[in-house]
Length: 176
Length: 176
DNA sequence: GACACCGTACTCGGATACCCTTTGTCCGAGTCCGCGTGG
DNA sequence: CCACGCGGACTCGGACAAAGGGTATCCGAGTACGGTGTC
Image 1 (cartoon, chains in turn purple, orange, red, green):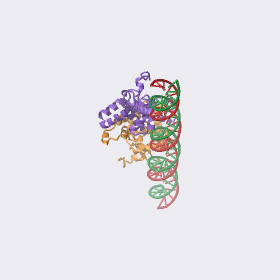
Image 2 (cartoon, protein in one colour):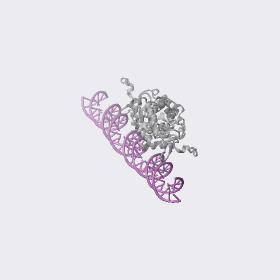
Image 3 (cartoon, protein in one colour):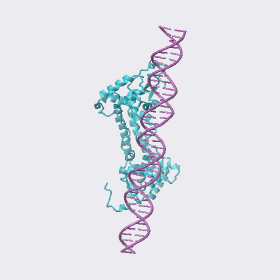
Image 4 (tube, protein in one colour):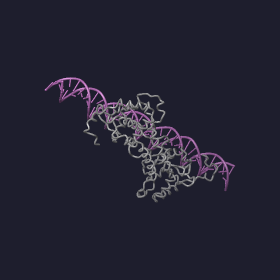
């Protein structure tokens, strides 16, 4: 029961990217600097978010990352599953079958009650995560966070975001 | 987001121990055999349950483990926390402070909104686990489980449980 | 002066080592039962 | 025949290695910009 620390980095980066204008991008190096993280390692997690269609990456100079969809449609569950994997935390190894007395497999068609209970709890966990949208995080930060910290974050984003000229070129408007 | 497989073993063992009579004990070796696990390694997890006051251990010949309290008062949460540790899965590293611009610490007195959301989700997870008691597990197994498997389990318990003579000696009735 | 080409710098992406947690195993401390011996 | 002492065997408990996953890092592929040469 331990989440990798990449989850925290991924959520913070996603929240930061939610503040960039339009389809501007922000380089991974800037995100890493914003949180004092290793740039090379942060790219690993950002890449997972890109694979999960949560972020989009633009290569080349003036490239970087941006959200692939509006922050209202990104939940904490999406971020956690993208980084930690979609498989449940509790995996029933069916050790009940490994006893010394061998019973016909038909006795185990019903799922293990322990497994059912653990999965039920995890569904509650995921449901709670799915209730929080990324837009809620940034809104709560803007409303209740410290104004100095919020202003510094906005200034950092404004300083490092790179507008994309492809915005004026609506020929390829993300048919993903 | 991955639970150790010791959790599964611990819950199964606790459920098995819930079926022993009175204050009889069952050796760890028998529990390991019951699920095809390594006896030496299983003792590690059983020892964690003992430290958490969920099980009691009786040393010496005819010794073993038994529940330290009735199965109605043991929840899945107790078992999971005993094996996996009581600390939450998401630990906020406060990376928001590690930015290049240093702000006074007074700006971070309010807890991180991301951390709050993650902990809220984990509270839901733990609440769901706390709703399931060990007695529910065994009752559900007796009622809906396969009769052959249930009978085999009962026979195995009856064959390996060791009655304690200290039951007839109420001089030391567990003042823990 | 304008256009095309090329070199450069910057970006992400994947492949590669290191370290810690988890897993797995072993041996020692403690305790009770059974047997041998002495009264 | 009975009581006492001792050895053995069985139990749990903690200390000791090995493996896997997470962490951290580096280098390569790709792309846009800027300079330069030519028309």
